[in-house]
Image (cartoon, rainbow, N blue to C red):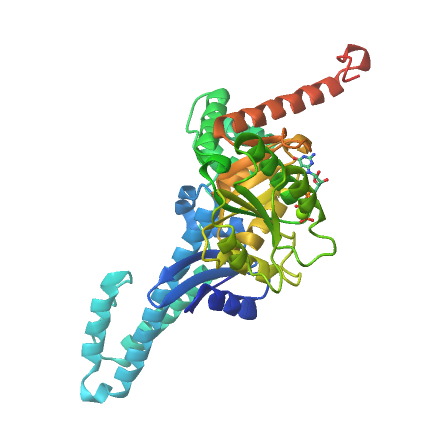
Length: 438
Ligand SMILES: Nc1nc2c(ncn2[C@@H]2O[C@H](COP(=O)(O)OP(=O)(O)OP(=O)(O)O)[C@@H](O)[C@H]2O)c(=O)[nH]1
Ligand SMILES: [Mg+2]
């Protein structure tokens, strides 16, 4: 895992540096404003297990992937600063060696001694012999090498040995529920004693706390919302559902639809059909109409829903589309649309892919087709993305639901029960199976 820090005057410049120096597979661990611009910390070959290991016990605080990324970035910043301090001390020692005969060595070690109070072991000797100098240099080199190992994630704290049996069973049940082994392990380890069922309840409570949902519906709050995500995840269908629901509740006059998809043939057709049926205007971002021009014109609308093309980082237009959302002077709340049927690793890579659009939340689609829902809950818990809506079918607008943590977790538990009942029925001899299972 290679971690690197970038500085630039603007986010666009920083992202350009990232893509030039680390390529399209770079994962953004954190971005923040600093004096004179922005700072981005990125990783190549990012591996959460490795990140957790390198953070040791502190990783427990990282209940979601986004926090883990930030902690990893923070650790990298700290190590990089220490590394540069060590380097400058070595430089100082070298320079001082050159003028040793002028009696500077004692002073330089005294200086090192002072500097060591901020995190390094103090050099014990203040003598001026060559041996002292070599020892000190060797110690610093070892220090630098260990810092480098830490920064590249090669040397982490070893895993704590053996969780107890209840924790083990709890972790298994949480994985059956659909959570990743990492998250299942970290939730189960918090259950310090007692029965399996108590641990299960405690873990569900933690999931409820970890799954963030907005208090207000977009339809009531109003604003500009964009849906991004991979092709086929359900962006356009969800916009159709949202638009239909809005029109039924508030009428068509204060709603508008926009699409940024000028990359694919007949890309707007579906959205225009929704617009025609609902009597709502549909605007297309193209060479002659920028997103901001269109949003300026629509500023009197209570709700504007933006559909986008499902592109991957290797597609032409991917960066352009996300940058225009992120840089708009309107407050665009960009949400990632994720299918609940995706594998957890795919969900994560999709999130990494779209993170640069400054995501404010997500919409979970195709809940009806997913065998278990723990994957989706784990995803939102690990990324920290609030879930605004979820969809569970193709009916417009019936299969759209405003998300709330308790019902979502309850739904996931029911889904697990159904799965377990089905598995139990399949294990029975056919004569004893309930009719629908037989
Ligand atoms: N079963 C089920 N199907 C859904 C759901 N949401 C969307 N779909 C279906 O998924 C397919 C793809 O949906 P779209 O809305 O076209 O996907 P998209 O994200 O706009 O795709 P692109 O425009 O290619 O980026 C369609 O057949 C939808 O009917 C859902 O909640 N459940
Ligand atoms: Mg679409």
